[in-house]
Length: 153
Image (cartoon, rainbow, N blue to C red; front, side):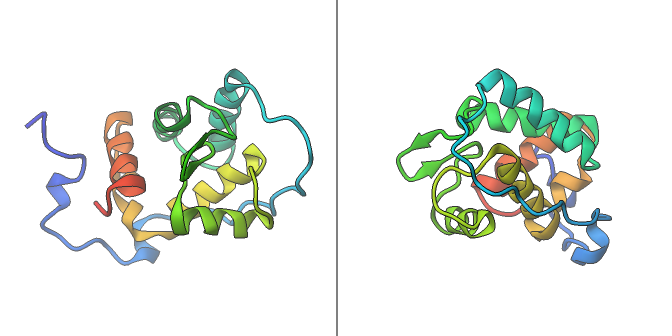
């Protein structure tokens, strides 16, 4: 039983309608205008990731799961570039294009912009319903890994 996925109990059922899957908060403020500021250090980014998600209505275990995901993906490096994979959460392809459109420019978006975009994905894409249904950091992290990288719950 310990080796089942975070959503295995829910795999037999269709996900709830998006509007009832969770209670979204109002959208975050518009991303800041890009600047030539140096990206934060990994240590500063780590602290800011937690603070940002906590001030935007996430539970502590959800913020911790998002921090673990950022550690796995980029080592908390906001402008990490691994070939086709870019930035804090290693976006690529269509999702990278959507991030750049969201930011309003190509290139490494400021950390707050990346976090706002991740928040937008989490709140508005039904494949993240398992993240919102999770009750532990491990389950939330597993849902993130499945949702961001390997498809729906």
